[in-house]
Image (cartoon, rainbow, N blue to C red; front, side):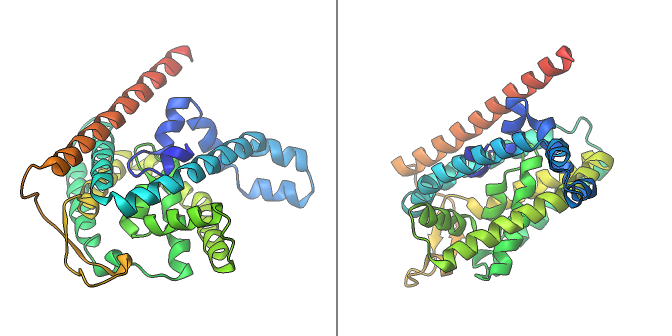
Length: 300
């Protein structure tokens, strides 16, 4: 799940479904509630641990952290030195995820179509705003990114790394993780990682309940909106771009413009091929997940 969570377009929730632990994960997260607080306040440690399935949570959390740490170096390097090809892979991954979410809606009606169109148009316009092209550097924004991005863990088909891409902080956060794992334990970097993790914790405990409520009562409209957000946000990672600020040395201050490739050269062909390969990979994973759920249902 950790390896999936750091790759935009591949959902940790989808991997949890494939591995057969999704229901247990959602149940464990939902039990960080008032009852847990009462158990802890009364020092009923064993009951509190059983209430949240603590052994499962700790083992899973450790695995996720190892997976994220293992890929942080690679993803930061690829974005630094192979941006076009990497964005091509991301584009295919996220497009496939959007198709999966759209396919999960059994019947398309007017409200779902309106939600899809609104989400697509809204995301397309939002990711083009200057704020998201050059996002704030404050700790408050890192906290917000953590709160929003972690929600993808409980939503199969939605990638937390993809949300960080939209918010303009994916590269910064993978860079922070890389530096800390390399032993660069400067107070500023450790504080930034701690703030981001605190945002993840708050988001998991708070937003997860909101998202579950929406999916329970307005599942089709919510999924259609999420699908639209994913499709509209593809503008952010279109792999073919022109640098409109060549004299600006800082990458986070540069402005890029999306363009169509002028010629089908080797680099362009490779980018398109990687996008198609990534799309096929995610659709294959989703097919395995669907078969796994069918087997689980028949077994029950």
